[in-house]
Image 1 (cartoon, each protein chain N blue to C red):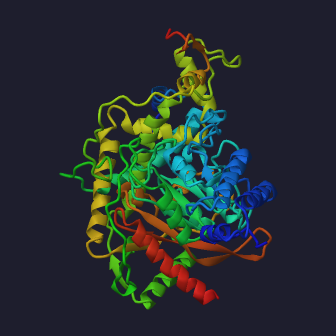
Image 2: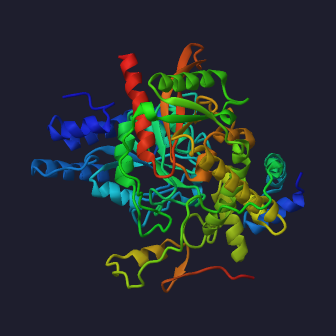
Length: 96
Length: 492
């Protein structure tokens, strides 16, 4: 069983706000899932290489050349999606 | 005029060529079906009526000029709402993207538009494609058209329900752990998960990037092939996409060796489903295929392996929803009054993400955090290698592997939603395919009878999963087609 403190720590790392009630809920649920995942310990993985992708991909390169400029208002639209903008920048709250 | 609902893509294409009906008539018939049927099913999140009508008119123009039209021209389809269609809302079934307008077309959409296909709208899904029942949608659950008290499966429950209810000819879904195949199986449809890399993921809202693939849900195997051929191919905008080098397959059933893994016929598999699957396998044997019992010794580790890898990748992919760039934000909200940057992150993600999404983000964050990385994530990646090797070994002996798509038929709404692990177990036969990057097809192969909500007996469809070697979609489609042909003949 993972502790409440661990749940709070993970939630903070993941930048997820949680209520008191949710902390105990996730504590229980995550513990059940993690117990199930313990099953992986049965597999002998000594000397086995990890797989990150199922297909073998070499470094994928493309020619370094300028792409045609978009004529539409795309960059402007992307900026406008932010909740707060100023002078074509996204505005954020202060860190402290 | 012919009955326009219930046609297959090929039949409708022929009808358009012979001018039995116009693309506009076809489009309006289906828009009307959506209006009539979707109150019961709730498959659609957005209906793109104007777009559909303008696309249909364009096709009629082409036909009247005597120009050739591609296979999908004028054929109405639906798109899972995690695939971007320019200027149309794309929510991923989440409150955090409730008002997000897609700024560009996904590559698959661009390809459909190039074919002059007609897009009817965007369909429901479990939030960020995380779930097996579509109950995790932030908006509403979708119902199974075959029994409204049951789930259509998930996460592509909206796409599957829309096709099954004859609200469209086909739909595009995404499959990270079974999300195309399992709903196809629950709704009596064909679902194809292509090889990892066969279809571009550009413009698909990322869930787990090493597992995600876009695939079609259709009424027939032939239709699945038509849609797959329209959307596949290498894309410079997705560096994990590849061009298949495998040529046309000539399939002779007498030379076909089919593997049946012992590890998939286990406790937890509904005995009636098992029966139907075994009968389907027998049918192939009678047709001349050789059935071989094979071993996939690490099969039982696929699900726990998946539930480390998928949430880990998801926790990284979903970090982009921060309340700053786009989507739901608490930055200016009067309710919570965020004081600093951290508050904006915490509050936006708390309000914007649903239960299951937060559960998986936390699970993934835990697996990747200092002190646990090796015990969980790295271990899971090594187990993934073992699972992949099992398949490589098996495919030395056989050309395709048959399993059930799902251990049960469609379950009842509410049956599993309060028990996350129970819900996860419904993916037990589908996740290994994503971990190994293989193509797999689910075809309807029979029915099991259940007592439905009114107390009378009802039939629910069962899906047979046909797994192939990398980039051998054409072969598994041909194998699926054989069953359909004999099945139709038996029913006729």
